[in-house]
Image (tube, rainbow, N blue to C red; front, side):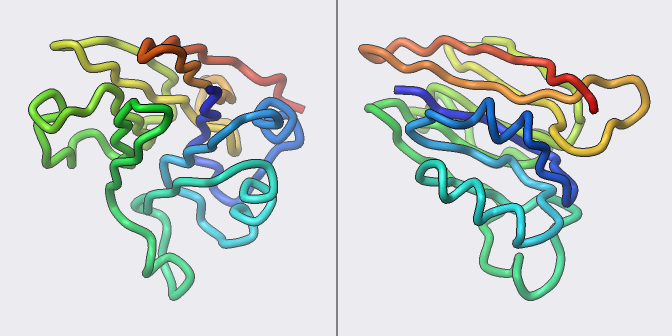
Length: 153
């Protein structure tokens, strides 16, 4: 099972990001979408889980959750935009992976048996940070993470 990860598009859905996400069984957008026009192309590729980021404002964003837990192939994945706003204890809640955005910095670490993954920003380049996306590969309850830097065209 392949779960595509994207965050912080800020109104820009790059063709390179769409190409990377193509073939995903599920896609997670970790917030700062900044417009509903980003969601349609993602939904056309695979089932989509989205959370609201600090820049997602207006009527279109009111129904987006600030955090959500989704189960994919038996693995609980908690999605939140800003990790500093995490209100659950992931391991106690049975969560295996926490996906977040906000910092624009791609990262992956494991703490207390929980993977914390930030795919970085797929939108406009910020400072010298890379433009990036990621994926979770789930097989037999095991999760492998890949973070990919996109060419900034």
